[in-house]
Image (cartoon, rainbow, N blue to C red; front, side):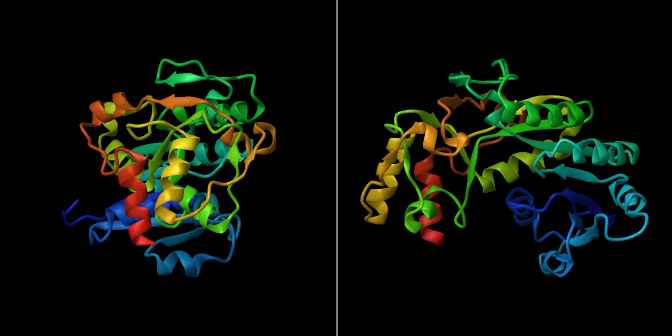
Length: 277
């Protein structure tokens, strides 16, 4: 990416995943980064080095978005709402971008338990999973789909919830959960986008190398933070995203991309988070 011509990155949704990608790629003078916003937050994006695209805030915004997406690398990370994915995918695909990556969720596995890889069955009967799966189907025809588990970095994650006192242990804490540091997810996204000729139209799961029980990582963090263990509550009382019992195996994408994680387990990842907080 060090040539004369600018390399365009278009962010459909500028949440924590998109911002992590920007941080991973910066500073690169050859990059031109655009991001969508539905509000008057264009100045905020500009401060991050992202050129704002005001969706629905200007006439002919669809044409403007299409022009930006032409010959660009596109990251799609906004949550599904049953409508926007079709609208945006029509615009993006018609613009003929270089590559598209769609960030999905391991929530598509719903009540499926145990070891999860690309061959595992999704849970189409789970309402939350079905909404995400419908969005996946729209993008998958011309994109790489990355199903991500819980995300964290120094600014957000389990350590922050423990410090705020808002976290409650799901059930007995013995269900398994997977996660990935946002820096590692950004590295995977970047390499996947720029290797799109190899990976297009494939769906992968991503995660670190050590799925753990909730209890294991909570005990480790509480020891590091000198906090008592949080109160346990019934699984029915926690967010549905915390009720699963899945161990994500991301070996395939790591092998296909020939990439090593900077934070292969929660120990390295949260050690970095605590040192940076």
